[in-house]
Image (cartoon, rainbow, N blue to C red; front, side, top):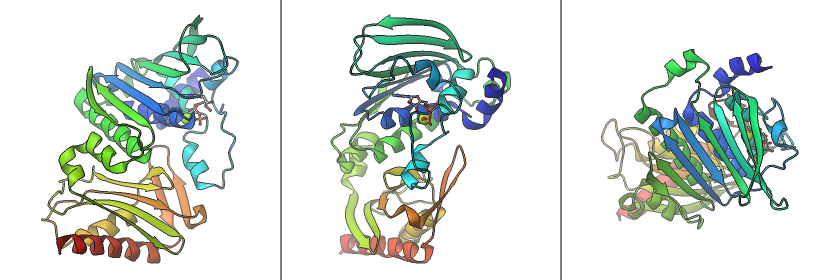
Length: 323
Ligand code: ADP
Ligand code: MG
């Protein structure tokens, strides 16, 4: 099984950012209200994710690292369920097979925590430790035993940028969770967990941008939209500051991207992209999720309604603000 894990790891864990994404999603699934992500050298040598969530029961710890082991019994028909499945109990198995892990975890009811060390997926020590409720994962030397993967990683600053992107979007998707991101000992951002999206934008992307965001809510049949869109003068040369969340999950969607860009089309210089954060709520039946392990692409059954609705709402908002 160890060999199989190494091969599969290439597909599901392709770089430090995907490790961070999996660990943070696990923390969110564990009902954490506070999550700290710390990296060194772009996550290549060191990733630490600390949460104050449920912790892992000591009888389940070893099992958590086994392929297809998941404590999340869910109904696959539900969108939120499908999206939160991630790698279907594969993440920890994959990550542990290509790194050195230290795990500290404690549940509410147990008197002490457990500290577990694994190298290439093999447990090398297990001890009791005094700690508070929650879980800390330290991932050291990612891909140290898979030279091909090691070579594939980019510079520390590039990998750190990918991680920043992942953590930012997860923090934006969960404004009720306090998220802190630390790179090489310096705090990159820290959100309050107050639930206020504008405060989150200020913490993550800067106060100046937060001051220049229009916020509105609109409903259309079964679709509800909460939008945070920037003044056209606050644009970007890339789409890094465009985020779409459906039923609380970050997703990629060309349709939504096009809808927004259409609304801004005459207002932006050429090769510039609008800044926006859209939170959509709709019935899972209207969405077709086509999950690839690294991408979250989505299709809507109501394209012909959704696109004009989004474009019109944003156009109206921009127009109103300019009056
Ligand atoms: P999945 O998330 O698809 O279940 P993972 O491999 O990511 O698979 O995790 C395996 C199991 O380990 C989870 O189902 C959960 O029970 C447990 N687990 C992982 N991370 C945490 C965490 N931070 N807090 C509590 N439990 C966790
Ligand atoms: Mg997971």
